[in-house]
Image (cartoon, rainbow, N blue to C red; front, side, top):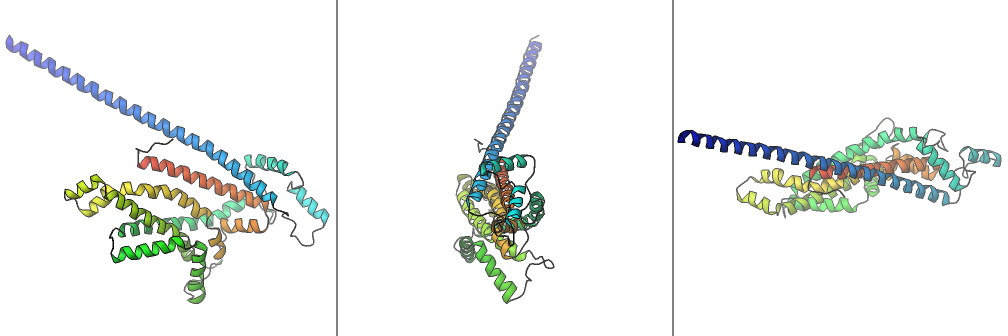
Length: 344
């Protein structure tokens, strides 16, 4: 009888512990699900907030560009030769340039909301078509420059961990040089040396679309910046307590670098990738002009030179949208890489 009672008590305690464990498991799963839902809600709220701010930013860019463009004396048809006043008045009426500037802005924004970027005053072609055709060239050039800058920047940044040795000194020297050298100066030097003097690489034309020199000219500065950023971040992370503990336990150096430090050290690099991508895609204006590449940058420069108002507005809005989008994507990736970061 005593044996049966003791057995029942043990069985009851076992069932009680099992029930507590199951309840704790359900509670932890519920808490985790609630936390995940809260994180998704915060991320969605942040994205919606940034999209609304992006719309406001683009509207401000449109207004500043439009009114600053019209504040400059002259017009798109003032430089035309042998244009009678009647023809000029007809052209201005066609492009709504005969109306007051505030009314022109309202008409342009109304057309823009309907997807109409206007017609070029120089070529007569649709601006949206011109932008997408030329951006394919700029995107290909910029994409290759971004990959080169990221790959070489990370490799050289890790190689610079050999402090006070020859590789480290060479990397510091060239990264400082490329950081301080403007891209248009570097592009001109590459063109003079390799195309004109040595004749190793043909000049860009319809038959020889060689991307080597333009990619090098565009990738030099971001590559140098990523190199310095990676080296500084790696040295800072390697001084943390958990890294010193791992090294004290005898963990291999390569394992410490790639498993314990690289992920945290890449956070500043990820922060820079978004603005870098936008700056390469939008900042290739002069490089494209130097190498006579018919990309979006060359079209934008030609639009400014020819006072092509629809082309200037269309490319400015497109580049502003690109810049805002890349910054938003960077912030989201930043949060995914390091969940500790709060999106406000």
